[in-house]
Image (cartoon, rainbow, N blue to C red; front, side, top):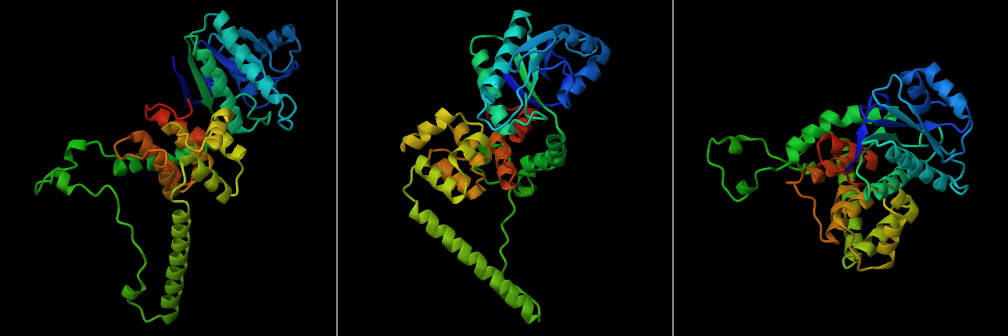
Length: 355
């Protein structure tokens, strides 16, 4: 069964079990922990917690769901992020493993996870997602269960509401779903002929068409044009210098040019370190298209660099593929958040990139 990433309030998920980010001590922490206690029934749940007592980080335990739509609450005792070198990753992985083990033991068919430890516990969001995906996918390789990762925070909610309408408009303007008509000349008066163009022509400044007597304004436009021309020339020289680069070589060059480190990129891309090492150490290696797209997000590439890098692995962004169109929207608008891209894909009924 699949792993789904959704934007929702975990206390409203209608699943067999929800996972809570619990404290090691008998108290209620902020964020997800507090929300679940208050939605389930604070007094009932805290009494259960008192009976259980302290639990080490990385362990998990189960209680009734009380007033929640879910039958159970699986409490994963979340590690506090210190510096990434204090055993946090092992503890976080154990949270997912133990929670899934308890779900299996209690014959749970569907379970909803928050991004454990990435809120008030301080774990980096992209790294927390990578670990979650690793552990959940490993579990789903041998067990049948519907698993949700629920993202609900002020930043993601605000971003989602801000782009929703614009994204749908972008899809309408750019998505081509009539392949047979590519080579057909539209007849006069047809709806296809009268439809607005899929893409606006790019307008470039032209000082020679400027109808103004303002010499200063003309000179300012001229300087702007010269600056743009120089930047384009530099970019062109750059591309020519790396014309024969393989995907691996060009990716590493772009990472260096962006002033980023390899770990910055594969963590932001939610790509496994082993997969990135394979790309880095084998110049002729071509990753699959999804991995390549994720790395473009991780490296914060512009759309031209994204297309160029993908082409070196034999891929293109198709106007007939909604996943490609949604991906292009985020790249064009410089929203380099792989989790938000996946939520948008899920909301449009499409498979996620990182699962």
